[in-house]
Length: 63
Image 1 (tube, rainbow, N blue to C red):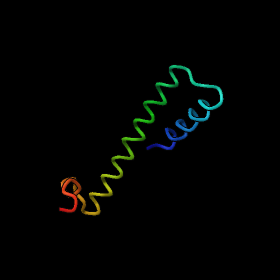
Image 2 (cartoon, rainbow, N blue to C red):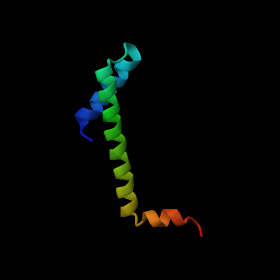
Image 3 (cartoon, one colour):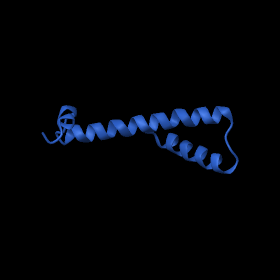
Image 4 (cartoon, helix red, strand yellow):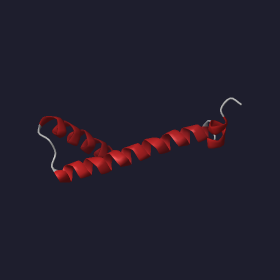
């Protein structure tokens, strides 16, 4: 995720704690959080793939 978007997430978080957010800012925050979460999920999947762990391996457990 781009540094500017992370900074904006932090700005909105601080503002929410101090003075509150407008409806537009709340929507922007929601969209930025979704982008952040999606990016984190992709990073985890990429790392698991790089380690040789596949989704089917995770579903099988210790059988």
